[in-house]
Length: 452
Ligand code: NDP
Image (cartoon, rainbow, N blue to C red; front, side, top):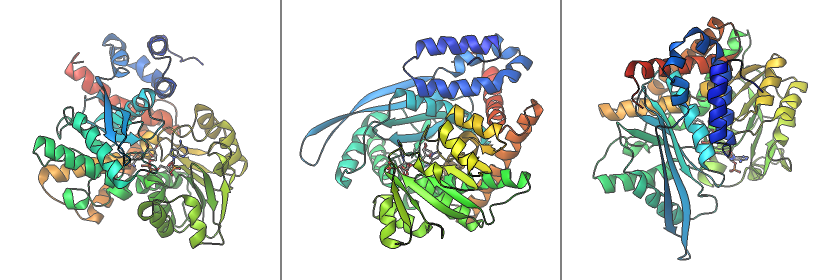
């Protein structure tokens, strides 16, 4: 692999040498650098001002111990991170991931992507990300609370409504945000919008829960419309069954499609009649159970245990695929299966779910492809709207938030499509999203001088 620009390649080589043990982070940087070749060629001030060297180094990495006591009275120790990547266009903003796979590479890749995603929303938010290798699965409510309180007991020093505003991500939902918010308030003696994804009773925004899933479908709808197509009558496969997947199901169904398969890390369900969003919501949000219990509610559906690293779902025939679980869940072979089965469009609900080989397969086969930075930006955009409501001490109606979100997703599509066209890569939304997201951050960095 080579990047077709000497400056970008040399910055990447230096980064790869210094971060050889961070493959996910390097993967994310490589993709952005490949897209930015024509921009760097057109704008020599980028190299002159060391913008690329600076943008790949986080402004700050906070790495800390999180000790907590489990229900058996045993002390447990996890690792916590907050990576404040880039504040050129606003306070750091990005979620907190709680999953045993979390390490510095994963938080860095997510934080790096967040810079460009947040810029694409058009709202004033910088890029950050955090989390822990804590596994919330199988823990009692009290254990979750003790972990979250301990996590916030360090994190509170580094965040604030005008500094850094974390949100949810994998493993961090309304329950975890609530425990963290309570601890922050106690430590600071301040009731502020320091976290988003809050409950409605404590300054949360209507439609934030739905926002990422809805946003992915709004983005997909724009891609389809531009190609003279629509959701109507299409079979959709959605990987995952968490926050993003659930509401992607609801919106795709509302737009006339049928969601035929969904998954978790153990396997996938198939329901040719269309997976009932309300059942999935009940299973995941109320019961906190596994997806295979769908069969208790809908016995005509089928469940297949996944022996293929959660990739079995990509063998299900569909017109539209929405990967909404985790990074690198859709590889080249899975992409080929989707293409062979006639997929026409893919939009990423999860962050970096498609490997570079998968993206190449989609592009080569003329599949419409919406990259995560653009397609799943609806979540953070609505978090930005939650921040605005908190600052103004106001609450908007569901429809007001939803309409604003819809407008933002339309703009993101239009801006990414226009940037791709401007730089001679029409239809390549990966390049378009990277260029459009980068341009604003780069201009702000240049304007502010060598501040970092
Ligand atoms: P949730 O924790 O609500 O759900 C995650 C889903 O993905 C679960 O079904 C989970 O299955 C599955 N999953 C997680 N890790 C793996 C794995 N290693 N292999 C297979 N399946 C896995 O998370 P969200 O829905 O919030 O997030 C999903 C993705 O969307 C993530 O990439 C996240 O970064 C991204 N995202 C989320 C946003 C949001 O607003 N929530 C905003 C933008 C992006 P299991 O239960 O078996 O672990």
